[in-house]
Image (cartoon, rainbow over all chains, first blue to last red; front, side, top):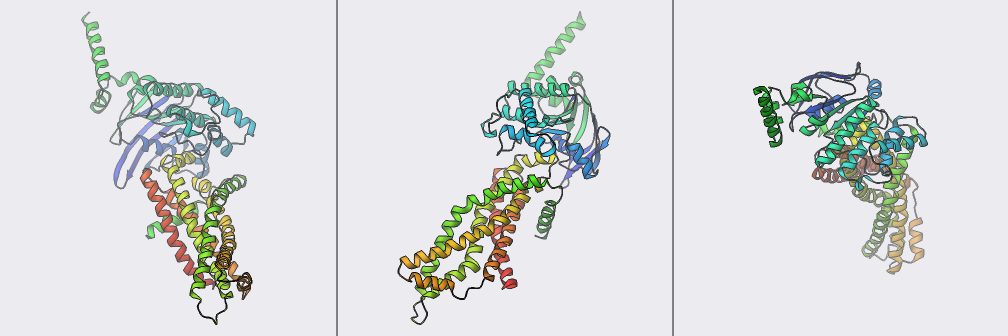
Length: 260
Length: 243
């Protein structure tokens, strides 16, 4: 479980995060939802320690992280896996070397064990046999899969995904979402996903935090999100025609049901 | 300016903390030494050979006094090569080739979040990425400078002899006369200082790149410009201090 408390962050006097608190539960996919520029990625970076919050704290399973001793932060960081928006695979390394990298740097596994683990996670993400490919030879979806494989290879406890399905076609995006959801449940890890994709919300969002202009305006489950009365969230959800039509059909069905 | 210098000092101090294991540092340093050293041999060889050749031709052109022995050509090529051309010109060439490559590589890693990926894994990205480059440059620059010394003096010999301006015996006699071994040490000290400046400044410029491809280009250009200026200033300071 990850807890954040009263996170504030400003860049050059511009407030990006304004007192965000919340609890991200273990074994669930927690979504940070919001439009572009609302501070979702900055919040994610504050949680993993890439950006230091001006005020506020982050706690991983009861262990204080922000401003803690370097050794303790390092210990927590070794339990973190992260999938970046751009996948962030190391260009100069093969797929195998990319996934092996955190095992080699942070663990004490022998070479054979490391390769076994690489093959296991590659199989898990559906990329068996891609060991010797270079990142430049992979499609966007494959890069995301390798990114996920690298994140989970060291048996991470916390998985962070920054817009995992951005730039992907709807089908591949759905597959990536499902993969993250399956891994979260299978390994019992705490997953936080930054997204602005309503498909992800509907498909995999166990708990959703809606950010608007640096503030958390709403949190709840995916079942509750369609019935919210928060104006900004409604504007966000129903900004596309598909969602409006779906809502209209649902309302009509409810009306028909009540008339009976 | 002062703020940038302070940031540079903090950046350099970050190389020394949370370092990787000696084995990883050694392997990374060897990889970087190959990238910086082996891949630069060709350009260093071409530049130094021709600079030696041109120096020889131009000195002989200016030596029209019959009372000055022709062996002076060899002497002057040697002195200019050891004191200035080999360490400084080689380092300037390497600032262009290696400096832009370091800044471009780190800049690209920064904007594609590869540096963030290292940090999230709990790896000190500066120590992992930059320290091996600095150590490798410090090891490899003096070797390239020694190579440049030989080739530059050899280039001067070939150009002088082939153009008929000087005989083989005169040139060899010139390069052997009044030899001061300290000049070699001076050149090597300069090359170590220049190596540190080029690798650290280029790494600094690349590491703090933000934005996109345009900024990576700017970082590379800035790395070369700043490295060259730093080399020239250090050259002047070292000449005053050590000669």
